[in-house]
Length: 351
Image (cartoon, rainbow, N blue to C red):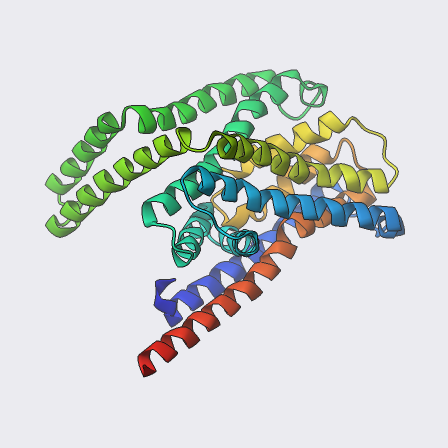
């Protein structure tokens, strides 16, 4: 990870600070704009059945997240122990939520899988495919929720926006279809763009040649790996899709469980739809881990279901369970992993 350079740690620290500040701003906006400046802790969330249910849902959430990557790797011909996959889940949660657009999360996953002996091309393809499976579910269902659920037809987002998002989804998924089935067309297009940038002196000769080489190599590697995934172990492919669906349902069920604990009556499908659209919007947030934006969008959508005093409480509990807890565990595991690597490298140097 950037050879453990101090500047990388400083950059991570700055991103972490930005995450905290934006999260605080998002929670403050929920408190000030949607919760009527009210906040109260309800001890009903400490009922044994609520705590046990949340613990069970957390176990399903983390386990399914690990298994969806594990089965994707199996389809590509690699097996990684479940314990290591669980470590990767937490490390990914830490990095993907303190780096903008989740780019750091991808690099961290690839770095970790390389340590497990997975080749770079397959590590890149596996992490990308895992993300694409979730994206396919979310991007397909989000416009349907906007167009069909009563909670959206009555207020926050109209059907016109739903149709616009549906069109955007078609374009987005069309891009990946182009990457997978017409790779050389896309390589040619991007190559022309890079060539034009070089002519306009936007790229140096050395960088232009390096980018052209890496572009062709990585796109062809990814396409080859995706085809290996599709023609690999069919049970592993099916299991990767199934565990992705379980992961998403568990992720979207946390607010419903919190609301049941607080005694609210609501449609479970409406809650799933609200969370699905919230997650859809989070994918395009430029802030680290969608911090600030996720809290604000959640408060905006759920204010019609949750009373003012409980809105900020549920928002904070939702983020704490799905993000903050995993990030804290990921930071500890990553530091331990680095310490082991440094010790191992030191022992090799002595030898």
